[in-house]
Length: 454
Image 1 (cartoon, rainbow, N blue to C red):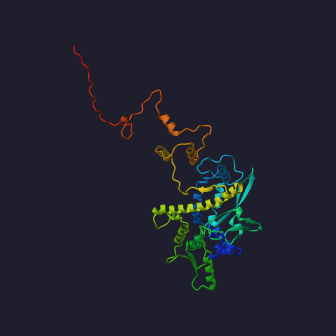
Image 2: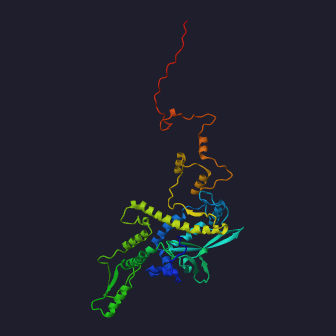
């Protein structure tokens, strides 16, 4: 019995413009690629949707990203860290030197890469420099989704190349870093995080217009002009024109011919509450991205005690997005290693710490951990705390001293005298020296004295 070495079926039938073919399952024409790109571009400017996107992008941008070099040679790890502008995991040394002349500005790259949550995909084209016998990553240049007109995919669902608008040149897939969200089969356009919010967003924009029109129309009432009894048709038309010309304002007014009467008619009965419906739609938009926490302050139902549960769900979603980014950018790291050392060389990974899991770090917490022995003072901890609180770097010419030893030396009595350190007998059980424990002392046994006879 032998293992299969080729496929019998296919992922797509290679009919040409394959992503459009695969998007036939999408029933909304405006959301079929490539028409989905301008639609999602409009949606991202909605205030609620902008908040949802920020609730994903900001924690990921502030998460600790690093190069995991476990099992790899130091030389390889250092090249990857230099080219991707990231620290090596476990090392808190800052990148020292001038401005980067090549390679990635990781913060800027990550900000652009997170656009794949909006459009479903976000490609970057790779460019390398050949420096001192090595290929070094020079740039990952974004290729905006709005410029992609064709994606060529083989029958097994692998991306072959893409074409941009107005260009006959193709970009080979092996030269691309392609971020894609929840890809299915050969649909390399991915699925936008905003897709489930389309219906709520569409209705919300309509309700905005309805609510704005109702305020403008009925905020001051409906003006009317009553023509005098027995008015001719021309006078009735004149009355209607006078009423239509009325506008609300500080200087508004009207002059009427004799016999005409002006009035304002208010609303009677009940009307649908557009504002409540808009609020409901905002809640649906937040719910589709597990961002329920955004509506806790305005929702009229539910308990705010559920906030922790909502945040836990959102945090799991953050970490899923982080893994997508890790897997994609690590493929680019593998290519860099292959170009320089061959496919047999172990390649480092780009990894992200737990997103959103950042307990408040205060001086009191650090002191408690030190006193309990949970952490030990060393130069690495000193460097980390300086970075965390944005303090100046330690002067390299000043030798590092263990703060616990320094504190012990300062607490010891000087050679010139001074109050001695209280003994345990002089302190209470709680170690308080201000009020020594009043323990009754036992009478000392009488000393025996030798007597001699005269």
